[in-house]
Length: 211
Length: 220
Image 1 (cartoon, each protein chain N blue to C red):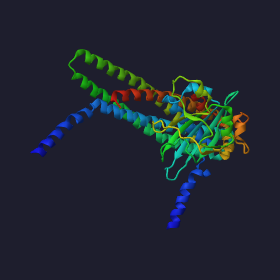
Image 2 (cartoon, chains in turn yellow, orange):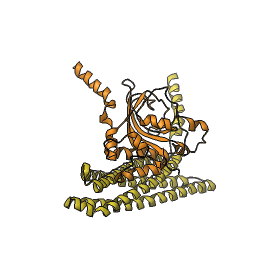
Image 3 (cartoon, rainbow over the protein chains, first blue to last red):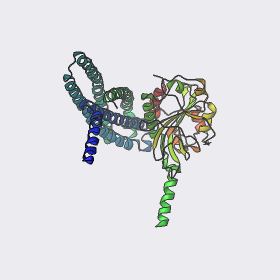
Image 4 (cartoon, rainbow over the protein chains, first blue to last red):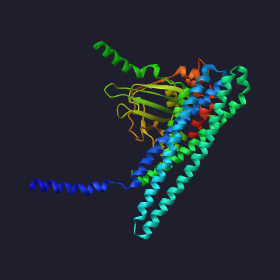
């Protein structure tokens, strides 16, 4: 009997602790979203590095007529970058999906509040979270569009040199190589700005997750 | 069997100190831009202090377990010149305890070199003993600076998966990666001194990569 009482006492004592440790659905989703944003940031960093390698490969190609096998390195780096871009697209979709889930869960939680002022205060927070994410999402779409154009140009350069690769054909293509390098440099700047915003959003999301 | 194990162990110990670890500058420059970008984004670096620095070292250092000891790192060194920041000098670090407070880890390190003499010491590929320099963790971004911070030899910033570690600094060698520098500048005899004094400049084809680093070094 004494043992049973002890066990009940321990069980009773543990219940509230477990309850306190639990987060709401929206907070759990927010934690997942912050992790996903972190992964997105890492992928973008990897893409930026590949793009930097590509810029150097193209520079070497036009300056030194394929010294150090620049064209082969360019092709390898372009392939790697395309693969990273696919991962980025998947990750962006995941972040968007989690944002939708988080807002839906949060909204549901607010509807359970009885005090009108509390509901309004929390709804204002939800509206801000939505508006901030809309800004980020717009940025993601714009940079994604520019990245599509740049990738198309780089693939065209690859096709051009695949069918005609001589010192003359490199010289003829100098203006297009420069166009690609300038666009790459602009892309790196845009991605840096985008990553700054991802970092800010991640901090905000993490704030709501209480982590 | 015992001999094979001994050989394997000897190879493992020797790995961080061989030139096989040295990277090309074409790869190091974007890697270092990534390190710098992250530290700036996360407000780890104090940009006011960056402006005061006479030189900057950006490194990725891989530490091994304490039982084996030592650490190997690859990175770049740049110096402030009359025209702005110099081109990059490829460096490697060997041995010692450069920023490693825990074994078996991977650290991104930015070191602000606050004196011209210290920049030269790095550029000469010197040995840094534990007592040879005053190295302290640099103040965070936005922190108010005092004169002592500007007077130190080094201000060190370390990033390890978001954790900022303490400084454990000394007993390491700096080596100039002459091969990487020669490849990058297309000059077989290029010296670190020439690069740091702007006598050897970044080739046109490579400028885009360094531009990102120069942009990141500007205050917000």
